[in-house]
Amino acid sequence: MMNFSWDALFLSLKVAGCSVIINLVITVPIGFLFARKKFIGKEFLDTILTLPMVLPPTVLGYYLLVLLGRHGWIGQCLEKYFNINLIFTWQAAVVAATIVTFPLVFKPTRTAFESVNVCYEQAASVLGISNFSIFFRIILPLAWRGIFAGLLLSFARALGEFGATLMVAGSIPGKTETLSIAIYQAVQEGDNDTASIAVIILSIVCIAVLVVAKKLTGYKIFH
Amino acid sequence: MNFIWNVQKTLLAGQRSFQLHLEYASSCKSVAIFGPSGAGKTTLIKMIAGLLQPDIGLIKIGSCVFFDKKQKINLKPQQRNLAYFFQSYSLFPHLTVQQNISFPLKKGIFNPTKKYNNLEISLLLERFELVNLAHQYPHELSGGQQQRVALARALITKPKLLLLDEPFSMLDYQLRKRLRSEVKAIQQQINCLLLIISHDQEDVDFFAEDVLILENGKLKK
Image (cartoon, rainbow over all chains, first blue to last red; front, side, top):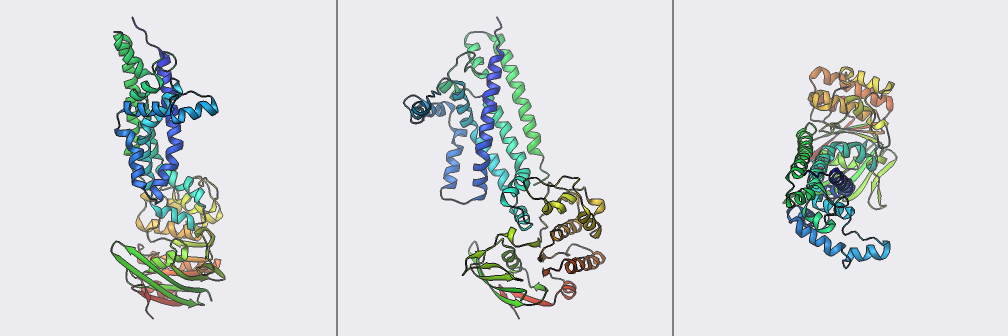
């Protein structure tokens, strides 16, 4: 019997969308800092920030459980001061997706900022434009394609996030069961029709995202 | 005195170190800098523009102290009220010719729109023969055309000091001759000081009241 739930798709889109927005807000300043400033331990920190790309998601999920759980360092603080318990909520799925996909945005963002030639900033500063304005008028317009491509990739990856999400958010239908988890559950229950539809929908969304990302990164007129 | 500087700077490139020590004072309005490549001409101009900081010394242009190590004065490039024509042009690749030229006229976080225009912009487009290219992007232009856009962009700010780094190198003989006169006319009109780097003796003869010859980071005179 087919038991496909659109809730799982909407939850997946919501989680992936939130993680993309958070990653955008975090990676633009961090990527710019790494591209333009020199500081001690920069490359070491870069390695640490890239770790989620190579670590198995279950390992990340375990770290997150240890940190965010009732007895975890962050979990305790959240519960004590804000009365928030993240584990087994959809917000925990957002945290998991954000951390797993962070390097996918951070790396291209850093590269995009590095590829903007400093001579444009110098020219604009001599022309009397403030550094703050230069960022919005010169640097961001020249770097946004790289940043946007990274965000799209991270969106596709977040849609497919499974391991870390399952560990910190569980699989509560209608609450924390994302589409990729729902596929796993459907297969476990022998409901191949539901699994097939979910697989096709997820595949189409991911292919569409990759096509757009490729189109954007291939457009290199400015470099 | 219009130009006063006494600066020292050590630049490191890998194993090599380059020492620059220049002392100069002049009441001329236009000065040319001459010398082989690697002599420190662009380094000097970048220090005057505020894009490089001297290790020690003083830079005073007109009545304005740009840099004084002893008094801890170091004006930002934005505060120096000068225009700098870069050897590499540095035209903004995402903006059209007209937007590039009007770029300094607009403050705040938004670039001028493609339609942004005024009398000043039209006049410069005409003077530098750019009217037909106004809506093209820099990568669609030839070297000589890009050079003219960069010149127009430098002049629109009506600076107190004009720094030109090889401004006519990509132009053919006729155009070079014509644009020299245009630049000189604008210089006289806005009454600004001029510092020009050029390998072309004709540029030097046409503009300069005084010539500085640089070699190995030192003044040869």
